[in-house]
Image 1 (cartoon, one colour):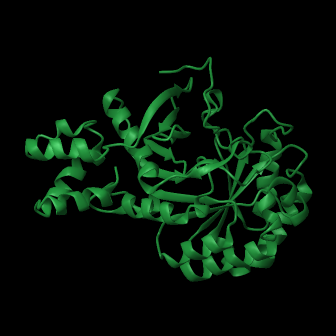
Image 2 (image 1 turned 90 degrees about the horizontal axis):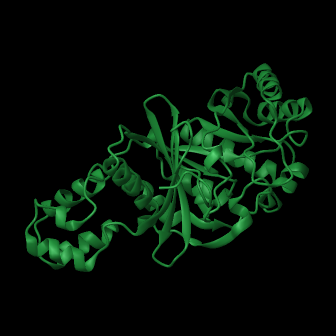
Length: 351
């Protein structure tokens, strides 16, 4: 729902101020899928809303459910016909996260990511971003699932900091006490390293988590994996990260995808450890590295095995760098990290 448009509509119709919170509390709960179900407001207003504003800006194409029931992936259709994907994940007991897309496609072209192979179609509006959460809330209620969404991650299709205006507004909607009422520390934004965007994010003074997709410990390899590295060098990016740490005193997450015999060797771990030590020194306690198993996208890469990921983590530990080997969820429905395409995939468990 476009909350700005709703506010304007209510003002134009002379509605009392409390009407906005009365409506959005019901909408954001996901318990209604039509304004006709809003029995707490007059019928004439229900009719006006139905004819003037969309309760949700996207429609379900398919939902795929993983064999473990710990990942649900939805293919959603936007009003202009573009398709996007969003994922509902259960990484730990009683914790469910929604992975949001912020663009239809992606212009970054990272070698290991399926989304980047599609190219960029357009930015999503703040309404389309937040409506992915609304979709999952409606889906949970309609299917009577015992799921409560506790976290939101901007790690789906697209680069969040190249859609800065809409992503920032969507975050403001998520943390608004009258709307989605989500705690700031329960939101994470991941970027491939858009320096002006990181600087703008820093100025917001949020408690929202920031994750940087690094994926390599030197410019040569990073440029091969991530074309954006041609625009922003590793030294520039690390300087920007240091500024973020100093100004916010907030932990930052370094994302590092583990590619067999590409960036997973002991030498890479040592190089990454030294890089962090040289750049962050007394700020090292604020740096956490997420080691991410590569999820196949049909390309040339293969994931590192568990033994090498553990070894890589141990080497980082020698530099007093905290690290986690991320659990991979949703591979069987192509809903894991780097696998989102926004395309119709046949022969899956679809609903």
